[in-house]
Picture (tube, rainbow, N blue to C red):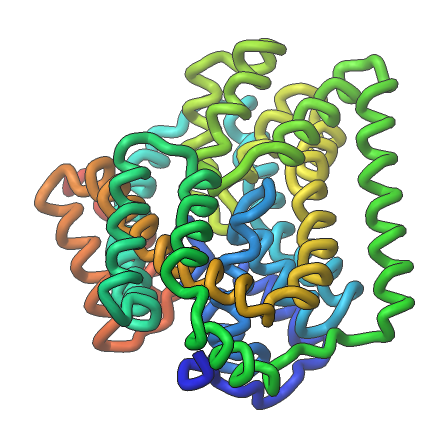
Length: 403
């Protein structure tokens, strides 16, 4: 794997990291978030490509939104505990504020006809970006017949409805079966020079993680014993954030169960509109929880729901980062990791097919998807501008009645 490694060039200041994460949260949409996060961190030399890819494999092994966890993992590697806290907060903040504004407008005025055309354009452009991500990822990790086989198995299992977590487990077992050999030991020896030294002394990092764990327990306890609607909201979102695996779309059924079926906080139509808002706002898709919280108890509810849905996996990421760094260079772990990264290519193909089925429904949507793909792959245009131009154009077409 050493031939795929790009060494770090520089370490940003805390201000540079936080500002970059704020801009990322203000502009990153859906699966395109992976491309933008990767482009930001690797291009600037803050982490190597190998470190990002290993983090992507790691964050799929525990509950929580994958790309938020990957952002936390990256920030923790770059600037330590306080960097992870501030960067993750600023990454989520823009979408929280936008969703809070949209929630207020929705429950005050109720008309969201303009959301649908934006949703169509964004989803189509995301298809184009995911195609670019899939091509790049497969070029790095589908390098022989065995990795292609694992990717194909992962795709088939996803098509048959297997949970992504179990697909990852199957891929890890196949990786152990196929790659536990001298080659794995050679990879281990070659990657020793890339071992990461986390910012800050080990003892202080453990103190910080213990503090984060105490807050985790406190949130659980407050939600459990606070017998008000706000307390139930916090506990409900905390449960979803603590146990749900995958990306936003795979976690959404659990959120619907809590908000619509169990507690009747939203009607089914309101929940569908909340999903639409989650799609058109940048940042993590699970910001839909903010909408639910606002409906339940206003601004306080929006804050409680957002903290509840995101904090558990933030804590898990800190713990897993420390554990993973101690074991990742063992030959068996690297064999499993190779299988997981190969499987992720198949999972990306599944996401591409799923998004395409939903988003590419008219000739115009193919135009948006192909245009986004060409712009990012061949013209090297920043994704931020691709989405801004696409959204602006779609709004103009909608309000001028040209579609």
